[in-house]
Image (cartoon, rainbow, N blue to C red; front, side):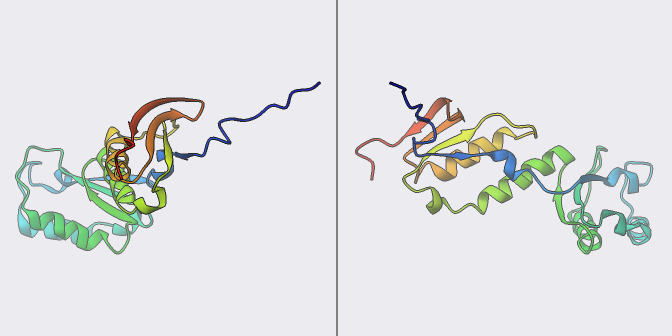
Length: 172
């Protein structure tokens, strides 16, 4: 008598969420304000405006722009607004921070757009391995957003998980 193999993982009703799928699409390029400061330290409005006006913004077409200042300089808030006003017509997305920080911000934006109702009552596995970097804040945020509705949340792979949260029987 031949035994039939049963894939218990496939039949478990687990829903796997791969955070790697939330990785920002497109290239992330840096825009360091330091390159537009007088002596690398001081923002002079007239010169700054002229430098931005002459800058080739088209090179950011379809790319993500990470705007930051690597110099220890005081940057007025309007300077960031001015960069956004020029880059906005070309860049796919713009965020304040280094390219690594851009990825974190992009993750949080995409996770904010998740509809928790889609995961109501589900047993969730947040996939642990990925080829692209997933910031710790993404794991924290997905747990924060889905815990109120999920039946359970686990970390890892469906065949080997670490329990994170399980709704108590007395919880609604």
